[in-house]
Image (cartoon, rainbow, N blue to C red; front, side, top):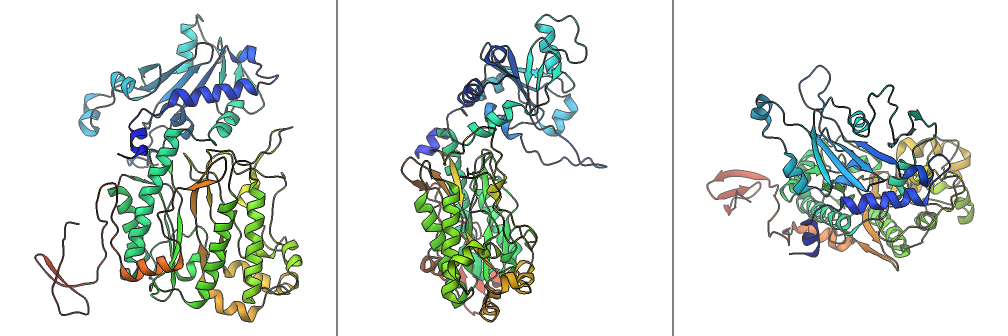
Length: 531
């Protein structure tokens, strides 16, 4: 059994997580919520409620509130959570058992006893969905009647603080506490992230292995999702992106049903969740098994960008420095290829590189794919691309710093993605070619050869440590020679954890029991139809 498996067999550390929240609240008390008032306050969180689509009895796909999950580990609908800061006790409220008919259709509901055994909380109570939890608590504390939510205690929710029935105008410090504390991960969280990345890595390998046999993007999407599910990653962390050919230049391509050009590239940005923790991996590879010259040149630049930036990661590093380094390598590389022309420093000052890399270098990852916090910056001003074009804003520029707060570098035990790319997006580049401010830096004749590349992105998940980082997705090949070998040979992909081979896409002719005749051949080949 791996160390991650042994950790994940333990209870989700809900008590440890809420203690971190309370510690942050005490350390950042304010005039609105001083420590003296904080100790007589309750934290109240609601989970995601079950729902159906409008004009339908079809249930909306359930996805738990990530903050409620963080302090409970509970992934069930219609729950609530209360933490009494004064007493240090937590209560999880679960739905009362439904009527017999509902249980016949949906199965038995979780009992209080089962929830008490499963979750790391002090108490579990079953309540009717219509029950006002806070009103009930107020009555227990001695109020004969509650009018206008004038509770005997202060209530901290994610959007406000209510003190003696008066809702304070400022945002709740509770939200800020969650966003700060969730950045650094506990051992259990790191183990869950490892598992999400392990499963996602197996799916990426399975897709690479079968890429030459696929005729349509949907086949590779189906293979990716089915591989994740078969290995325990039941939910996708986000909508899979399987972009063949020039469609790889669309950052959030979601169509995933177009034919695959056997001479083009395939960009796959897809990952699963494990226990609500996300992975985020991107690989770009040739459908034929061999990169053409132009893609090979661009891929080498992107790989250098990624390796250099990963090498910079350690506790305290500023994300700005990594981002700037990636763009500097991009500019130097495109100058050498002749795509860019002119003075290198002037190109950097004018931020021409943002026409080819229009997204941020990466983001925090955890309970969300784009997790709370956002890698910190040396400055609080947005980094933008060319102003004459539609605004191109780097993902990480949306950081809101508290008044008087000083931006800090990446902390140890945070997990980030590093995902540089180079894109030849006509919607962005063709308008630029018509503007003298930008076309004086771009050689349109040379660029013409590279439109077919579409986009190249390489993305890994990295655990930041005191002196460096650990690549949680190192098992997924990204070196050119290794990618070409796997795609060309269709080498077997075996999960070291359970020994299972992943599914296979084959071009099949006639079929008889235990054998297939592959298209274009005349020989019967033994085949295991159960794998």
